[in-house]
Image (cartoon, rainbow, N blue to C red):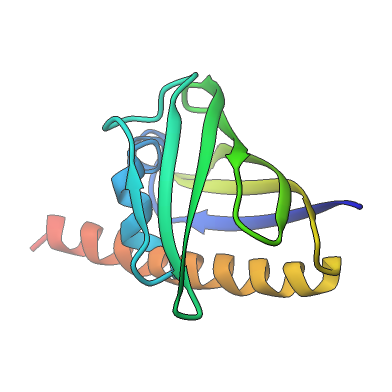
Length: 149
């Protein structure tokens, strides 16, 4: 069954700064709540590029390959799963950025299919994105604070 998950994150940074940060895959490693997350890719998200992700979930190491299928600068980029770990069977992830009063609202819209019940995956996704949102808030607060010291 196809499921949809949406998560909003407020980023205390202008759109250009947030876009620049999130289109550098190595920065995702900095704010992701998964331990031992590693992304192999070019320095910036590029349409047609594969993102090779290695991560550990509950001590179990797994790999994942997504292709960046669309990049609309300072608006959105989309990655779609090519080689997914269990329990995922399909993955479409749109990262949408909107500027609002000197900050950025990032919306993650994920369409997925999995071999587990939707409610279980949604709990895991919600925890993952909440953890990421906390790290994003901390990162941008510390980054901005250090600029003015």
